[in-house]
Image 1 (spheres, rainbow, N blue to C red):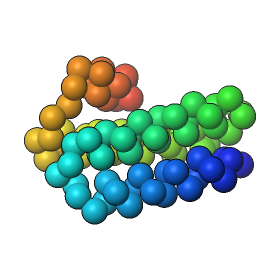
Image 2 (cartoon, rainbow, N blue to C red):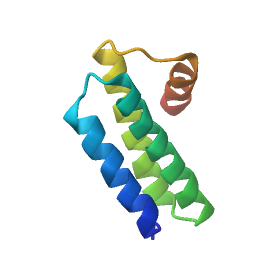
Image 3 (cartoon, one colour):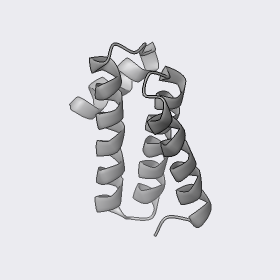
Length: 84
């Protein structure tokens, strides 16, 4: 189970990102939140939850790329790692 404070933070970040899909900063914050959640889940041996969070990170990053939003080098590298 994910700690409540992290789940609440994720909900806030999702609302911000959903309110403006053209805001690359908010979209990036969301994929980073998903990646951190995946890391936390892996530490807790929650493999299925980690995979779901990584899938969400991939979906967010690939959506950003498809919409032509700026991806920094770190974003591009993480997207390539998720794709591999």
